[in-house]
Length: 86
Image (cartoon, rainbow, N blue to C red; front, side, top):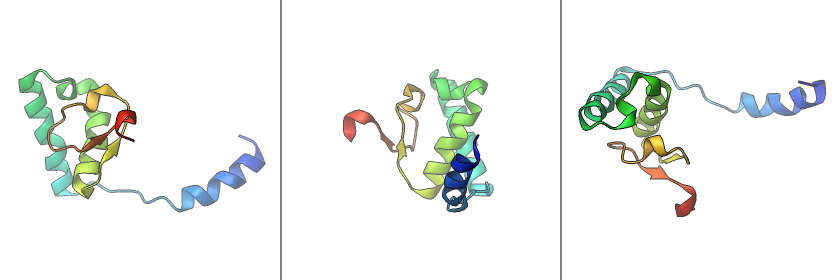
């Protein structure tokens, strides 16, 4: 990455908040895995641990998740916004 691009990116990164998982978020993460695994939904697979953390963060914060990734379709407790809803 060039120096100019780095200088442009650094102020934007400084505005971000890192969300640390708390006990409630860990429970939110674990519940969909068990429910989805029983239902045969893709979020139940270990392969999608990262996707479940993204969903858990949105659920924990009470925010909709904007995504075009079909893995989130039908995820319990997740409000999903896709391109067709924008």
